Image (cartoon, rainbow, N blue to C red; front, top):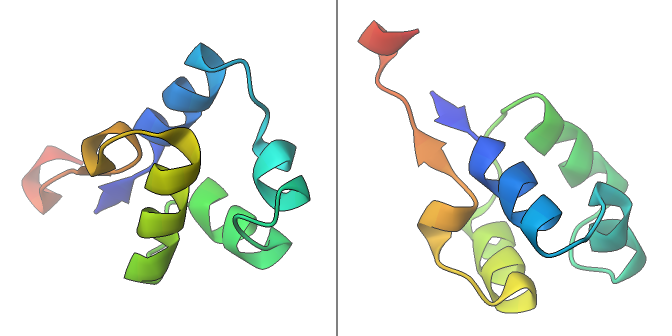
Amino acid sequence: MLSYDPLWRTLLSKHLKKSDLVTNKIISTTTLAKLGKNQPVNAQIYDNLCNFLNCKIEDIVEHIPNNEK
């Protein structure tokens, strides 16, 4: 399972809101909804987010093994 909790923490640390990602055309509202539900997204989205937030991929997504649910 993927968790985007690191993304939400990164946004908070940079004083940004989820809506800023859509406003700045980093992701679409559809993608934001997927992230909110911890659903997988295209790898290009991770690149867009990392570039915009100037961070590493582990700052936006975390893999949680199935046995840790």
